[in-house]
Amino acid sequence: MKDLNSRISGFYNKETEERQQILKERLNLTDGQLEKLQTDSAGLPLDVADRMIENVVGRFQLPFGIATNFTVNGQDYLIPMAVEEPSVVAAASNMARIARESGGFQTSYTGSIMIAQMHILDLNDTNEAQQKIQDAKQTLLDQANTFDKTLTSLGGGAIDIELRTLQLRNGEEVLALHLLVDVLDAMGANTVNTMTEKLTPEIEQLTGGKVLLRILSNLASYRLAKATVSIPVEHLATEGFSGEEVAKRMVLANEIAWADPYRAATHNKGIMNGIDPVVLATGNDWRAIEAGAHAYAARDGQYRALTEWQLEDGQLKGVLELPMAVGIVGGATKTHPTAQLALEIMGIQSSSDLAQLIAAVGLSQNMGAIKALATEGIQRGHMALHARNIAVQAGASNEQIDWLTKQMVSEKNVHIDRAKELLQQVKN
Ligand code: MEV
View 1: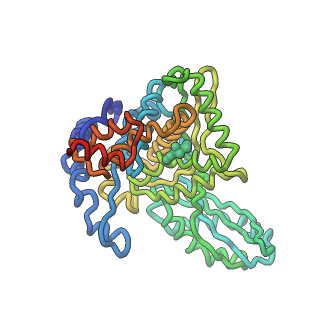
View 2: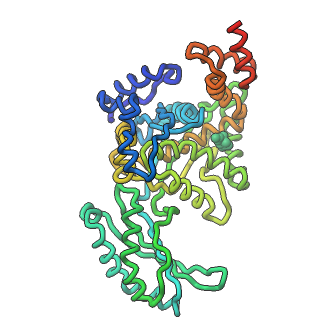
View 3: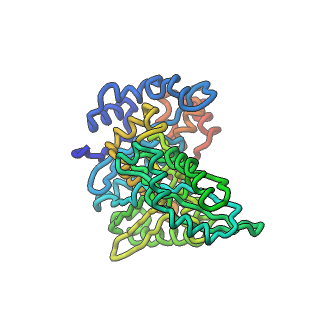
């Protein structure tokens, strides 16, 4: 998608069909691709759903929106987001619009290295067991690499073993073996879980211990995605505040989230507002991403903000780094037709590309949240969008929704009772 221009002004105000047409034109989508957004049965056929999980009785739908205006590493992207919360897509797009004026987001990725854990118990001598594993490391890696020939033929596979000792509360020592595996474009859960299960007899024989747990770690600390952004403060000015004042307040907001776990939880939830919808839209495991993000946020012993914001030489600089174990092959990513379309919309070629784009969306979302919170407050923007939902809930017809929304916002009274009252007034 080299020549894509992701800047679409007024996308929000258009009808759904108009937005679909714009998407089609900008991305050269085929009618077949577009149909996945237009027809329920094409988006996720029931028989496909039935093969994905157990006891299927239907499908559950979510709004599928497009965040506009993103520039990441010099290239424009339209970003699909599946999410129920109003204002998320709007905030990400708005901040991406500000960011693109100064070059957009820069991102990087440490590689698709997953950690698979084996917890070894009942060891007579933990040090000796560690030594034996170290001595046999290459043999163990070679052995692990016989279990997924496709992965190794593509250049991936087990690359290292790390060991940690743990002390349980009953005083028992446990050896945690970390098998590091380059899973390339997969999320990698199945591959690495299989490797650890199959390696169990070798490890038990080698150490004389018993392997209790064999499973990946969601704290994918060797699979980090990082996004940065640098914004001249004048681009942040609002009606009530100079750009510099906005930037200073945003930095303070971030400092508070660094110091206060109660605030950090909410601050990081705002980041996940951007991340989860892309993870979900692409058929990836958002619980895995959530678990990894929050564990990473607590890596120094206190739960802290995942972002850093600093004011330097008239620029507001933001950084977000977090584990990002997402794939573009296998699992729901492959089977869910809309997830496939989501990848096509982004023009994603690798899990690396996807992980980096997701980090950029997370940073953009956080920027929007703390900018609003540290200035006019979150409710004004939220309320405008929330009002639409209230209007629908109150029973407004399609023609009445815009009018009712505007009326409630101008009255600063966004409430179902008021909506019903206003509808009643026009009826009489
Ligand atoms: C709401 O979904 C997200 C925010 O609470 C994030 C934040 O407080 O930073 C607005």
